[in-house]
Image (cartoon, rainbow over the protein chains, first blue to last red):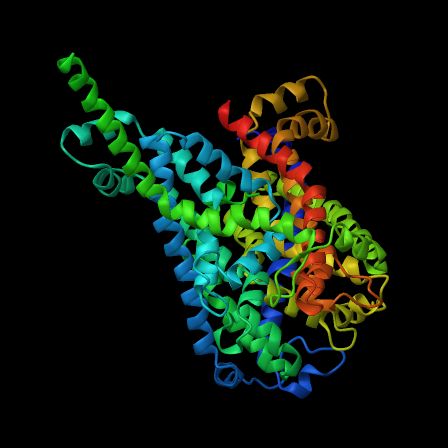
Length: 289
Length: 301
């Protein structure tokens, strides 16, 4: 494919040398900027506390202490916090699929009276910066109107607000809009009701968009900090991020760094496993308000 | 008469039934939107003019919350700091990813590696990134000063000096977020027809001119959309200052959201915190509305 620099320039001897130099520089720069910090963290976790306090720092650990990872797991009670985070992120994912998919389907294919008003009211929330809703949503979560439930310290305090996601509705509806109405009509003539149509016909052909919504949901929930910080004052209920921030000041550095490395592993593994889907869904995903 | 009303009755009943099914499928979404989006929007505006203590009923206090905010010397500081962060974050967070994307678009080897590497930080939890960089910035045994020392250069004070703390936060945020912007630009660059570059070259346009007259105009839309998004996102910066500096040194990294957090959850003054949210909304509303309009227009065409 023709880009900024023409292929003929690249083929000339000067072009070849120039390309080689620029390629090598970029490679080194990328290794230093994006991979070296990770090397630093992983090896840093395995240095002794005394070595970590040395100035200047050592490039390669003098003594290796891989057992720090096991220590960090026990000291920080990481198993429990992994489970907490998994419950919070998994529930947020399920809530978003269970609530937003039927809603987007109804708005796209059943087109009820005032459907456009509902859609407009949902999309209007995209214009609000998330931070502007932080305080009133927190106040609401402490005492749900009519029900008078307090969701503080319950994972539902993350799940339910996560499902009020206009961007999901927008993505899903846009995808459902592309599905020809004839498909729905054919199903109806065969006697399938709307729910059955959604389950049997729409969902199987919507896998790509469901993957995008799912990845966005899990990654957002795993990375979120400020909202879990507010709704989980009970230290035993906190997510990994909130816990790490809370204990950071009191921990020996090697244990803290080991804990951070372990806390990052699931997302990095998820990324390596699903990199194609994640990078493909990125253009849709990060254009979020 | 009877026959015609029966003919009409069937579609009407079916219409009612269809509407009921549709609203049945919408009901859960309507409940969560009502509880966690629409109601808090209204509540936020009301709270801005109320005093709340969660024990007694809220009382109306007019513009007291706003006057209290304006009287707080930190209020102006927080806005100035936030604008500084946004400004610096745009200089770096806008230029660096774009130039990186232009560069990567020219490279013919190891494409997959470059994409993977630049996006890796995006997958780290922001708290981990912030804590990790706090350790890198340590003026003693930290990574940066050790590396500078090894190169024979003097180290910096980074987070410990009010002159460099905000800039240090901008570096972290750029490193953590540039992966997504870079890859979006890269996708946009891939859609530029090669003939445009060829034609420009035949007209005698050099590298810089091709960049200016082909690359820029062809990616203008994506550039504008991401610019708006970055303004909105960076004005809400919280995790980096909260985790790395706590607003210091000398209040040099107190941001709007950090102050809002303090009002609500340290001083328990939810009225003033809401008033601050309202001001933030007004400040950012223009950008968000512009962004939504742009993307919807692009969708329709």
